[in-house]
Length: 500
Image (cartoon, rainbow, N blue to C red):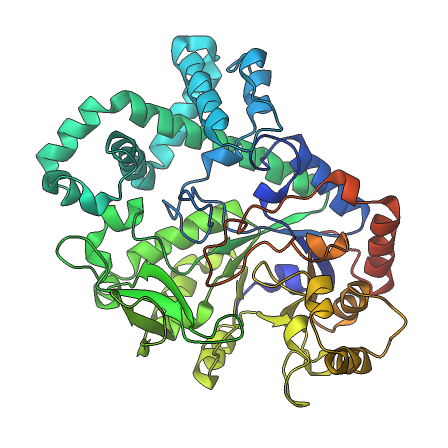
């Protein structure tokens, strides 16, 4: 039996907000004082779960689902004020928080590393750094070299690197480590700082009764340290490019489907060595979070395989995956860690997918914005909810509830309120109230809905390269005392105001 019910043992409320969406800091939110202030806000409202998106280092587009590593943290999330407080960054090198370019963040991190390297850190900090490097050598060594090489080759993907490096010939790798040792050390320092800041934030959240709910993308980016370092685990051509890529068929979000472009796994190879790569990945995620969402869980049962040369996802087909064997291994090897998992079971979900999920007693997701299409058997309708689920008004891929509702026809709006049964409550609070009243043990609200935000405030539009994707940030000025009080009242009314 899965022990995930350490969270689902009682009714709880959560807020979905990515770290980058926090106020404060140049270009993006970070792990600094606004993150602590957000924890305080949650605790004061009786909310005990903070859900984020993946926190790995991203490519230039900022998508947290196309990371450069499955294990590393995003250095752009590092609080620069924290570095200044430790004497590793001069105050005059702190960038203007109004800047919208990440360049100054990167420059400040390099200055902090220079100070750390010049022994401006204490002896205990140096020892802690060395312990961190040793403890994480399994992934950190390849990741640091990968990032150093990527910088050296002008941020070009590893498939375009010289063959000796691309194919990881030992002599070439040794030479690269010697030549780039200073950059490699800097990358390791950034990871050391990130994980220390994350651990401090997580400890503070626990003290305030707030649990961190993370997100593990099922796939990894083609241009990532993981694919470069473990090419035999992926379905690649000889030059390192993907033979087939991941995505989903046409659905609610896109008439042409979604072509994500991630390489598919060489599942036979992974299964042959007992899923070692997956075990390491689960361990690293479970070390970061109190609970982990498996993005695109259905890919463990069958995945949509698209020819790499196809521009859309239309011409893909389903291929079976060894999900049962994988999860049996994960539960057998890691069950002592508690396995607090939730499955993102949205999209084209077959009975086989649900059988796999329920076999391991993994909670699923219910999205209220999807509840009002179809007939009375729609699983997202409030009367069809079951306790072992997480209910949302919407996710990071949905529009804000207010914008979603405003785009409905009059007939559709009437149907929504007819189903909800309280037509005097304006949106988005009518849907928020529905989520809070659900029998699902955990109700999660995107921060945009708490702030009553409409058009122009969604986090992501799936299947698009919209430059606004992943850029949304909120302002404390948007969070009035009345909104916070209304949220807290609903949390208490529906008996979700509990601690861990």
